Structures are given as C-alpha cells and as structure tokens.
Image (cartoon, rainbow, N blue to C red; front, side, top):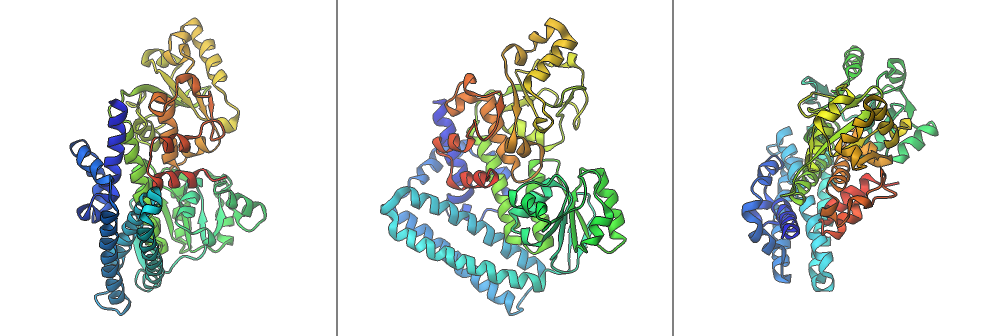
Length: 474
C-alpha cells in the first residue's frame, strides 16, 4: 500500500501541475508550492484523470489550441503597439512557458499510448510548431519593449540593463550552468576558472574561444574589462562578487548577483536572468521545471520516515552543511533530517558532535580533493577512538561520497541541483527505489548509480526524466 500511495501521489502531483483540466492549465508558477500541500485530498480524482481516452486527449488538445489562438491574438496586439507594455510582454512570456510545459507533458502521454493516439499526436505536433513560431515572434517584441529593464537581483539591488546583453561574463559555475539552461551560451565571452559544465564551455575555454577571468573567489577586474561585457553574472552568496559589482558598476557595467540560498532561489534566479537577457520564456520554463522536480520528490517520498543525516564538506577540520542553504534544502527534500539543521551555513563542528547527534547516514563532498569515506572514518577513529563506532553511520558502514556530476549537482546552486535531491533520496531510502542498502556504492557517481533509470522504472513523468538527463549529459 505504501508503494501504491507514492505512485498515486506522484501521478496526482503531475496532474495538478500540468494535466489536471482547464482550471489547472491556468495555474501560475507562484501557486505551485501551495498546490503541493493539497495533493493528499485529491489522489483518487487526479489518478483517475490520468487514464484518458482518445476523445478526452483530443478535447484537451483542442483546449490548448484555443489557448494558443488567444495568445497569438495578444501577441499581434503587442507587435502592433496596442496596449504594449513590459508587464504585458512578461505575462505573455510566462503563459507561453506554461503552455510549452503542458504540451511537453501531453506529448509524453500520447507517445506512451502509441498508435491509439496517432491522430492526436499529429495535432499536438502542429500545436508545438505554432508555439515555436510564437516564441520566435515574441523574442522580437521583447527586444523592442523590454529594454531598458530594471531587475532586483539576489542582493536586493536594482540593476538596470539598458540593451539586450550580447557579451556576458559569468564568475560562478552555477551562473554558467543557468546561462546554458537559458540558451545563452552563444553570448558567453568569459567564465571563471571552475566553470566546467556543460562540457562545451570547458572545451571552448581550452581552445581560447571563451576567456578565463580568474577564480570564483578572486575574479580579475582587468580580465573582465578586457572582454568589454555588457552584463556580468555572479551569485549573491559570494562576498567577493559584491566587491566586484561595486568596482564594475563604476565602469558602467551591470552586474547581477543571483539569489542562491535555496533551490527555490534558483528557480527565481532563472526568471531574473531571463528578464535581464530577454529570455523570458526560457526563464519561466526553467523555473517551472525546477519546482516541478522538487515537488515530485516530495510526492515520491510521501509517508517515508526521514533518516537522520549529516553532510560533510571537509574532513580535517570538520565542516558540515548547516541550514539556510540549498544543500540543506536538498537533504530535506530527499527525506533526510539534517542533524546540523540548527546551525547556519557551513559550520565547523567537533568530531564529538557526531557522537551526540548520531546521524544514520553521512554524505561527503570533496571528491575533487581526493577525500574518501575511509579518510573520514580514519579521522573519526583518531579523534574518538573506539567510540567512533558508536556513530550509527560508521557502525552501519553508511558513509557515502558524492562523485562527478552528482557532487557538482549538490555543491552548485543551479538547475542541476534537483539531480542531487534524487541521488540523496536513493541513498537515504533505497527501498523506495527497489534497492537495498548493500546496493548503494560508497562512492556514488552517475557511472555506478543511474538515478534517472530508477525513476523511469517507477513511472516518473517524461518531462522530469528529460530535465534530469540534460543535467547529466556527458
């Protein structure tokens, strides 16, 4: 029954977000979090709606076609200058993004039903083609009406972008990743030394096609000025980025520091950067998908007892994940109780505190520095002696190291962060994915634990699987 409840919850969540009838078609992104809390009362009703006949799917396509006609009419009015405003353009972009997500979900349903839905599939393909044309036309209207644009960034500052940015510099790996998701790589002229995803960015930097502007903590003002950027993007959680912002604004270069304290901040960052670059549809689409992925994790683990866990970011001295950051939020969404959740940020703690707080699981980062689970165990034995084995995670051999893209997804506040939620969920609750504790490798990487396939086996929605696959592309 518990497994069936999780499946029903997942189906219900997807239906609530994207396919739950006309009322849900007009949901605003800001309403999604409130909707998550309403799942339990609508399980049977929404699960039943998922079983659609050919006629019902055809009717839904017809409804979407009508909505597309209305959006097309409104775009004509904007293009001709009738009641044109920045607000109206942004609202239209948001609705186009929602419609894109709904079409993606409906396409997945139609494909799953095969030949029985061949006629509907053709209608859907025609709608998607029309939507793509509308998005292209909106881009032209955006450039005329959206700039200059003022955005409030993650530091709370108003930043004015006078023209559509064509030369963008990123000074944070997470910002570079978001730039990719917003289809802005062709405008990227400089990155920090640690921006290595997507792989094409690292390759372009090696070939000299994208310049390096220094480290995340020490970006070079001179290197950035040499590139003559019209937008620099960093993160509000890095103090050096605030200083750089002050300096560059003296040269008339706008600097946007993205909010990065939570996964939902990343969703908001997508909208902020989309607004500042004229990529509004892309910004809203990415924001929608981040919230969808986080919400599906909540539904998938509904009713599962949280596991006490600690996340270690450095061994000697011992630093851990506290609260008030995206890593803490990822742990909570994954069905973990962060034993250091009463502390802020990434505090230094004593080995004795692990004895006192008794985590059942310890997750480590630091793969790129050569740290291993054995290093942590040895350190604890040196500090605590035989008492180290009284820590449940040590006694149960449940110390795990995140490696490769799984580590980067956890330590960088970008759209890829949602991948780490599911990786942590598998580590914490292997039984929910048809695994045992013994099936989980101690060093967890995409090569030895395929989270996407595990979710696919459990009937996760296609648009979620596609979103995660993009985050793990080689």
